[in-house]
Length: 178
Image (tube, rainbow, N blue to C red; front, side, top):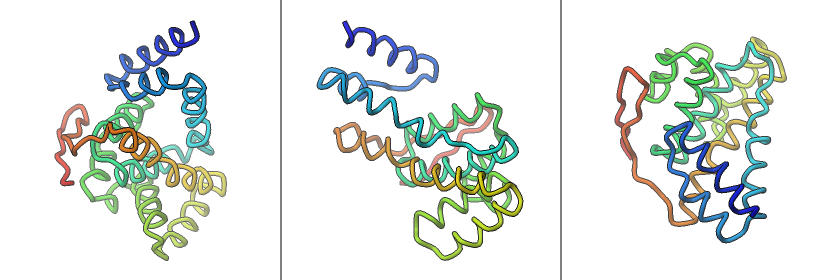
């Protein structure tokens, strides 16, 4: 009975974002308890800090996800960001490697890229985020930078890795190289 409930919730999520949830169903078939662990992950990365810093957080999550995957997980982050009201053009600029032209979202994106690569510029970007948007925003971006790669790595570990794909921004398609 619990598997039926969990699978129904998984299907609902998949339909909402046109997302392939087959790996989630596989987890449920093996261990419903593991699904509960999977369901707790958003609590970690969804710490977003203040509303003013949402574009910065979005940029950090997108950079981290793109670092782990340029396929379905990246598309899901884009779709969820657009559904939450993120600016389509700045999302696209970040994905195309033009984060320096993407304002606050680009700042979060560059911060996450630097943090992931252990680039000393991460400290500069973090200080800038804290100065402009507050310490809570800087903390939320650290959470986003750390977490965007979780799902892509989990999926690859389960044999559900995906090749790079075209990312749909609603009005523009961007093809990323692997």
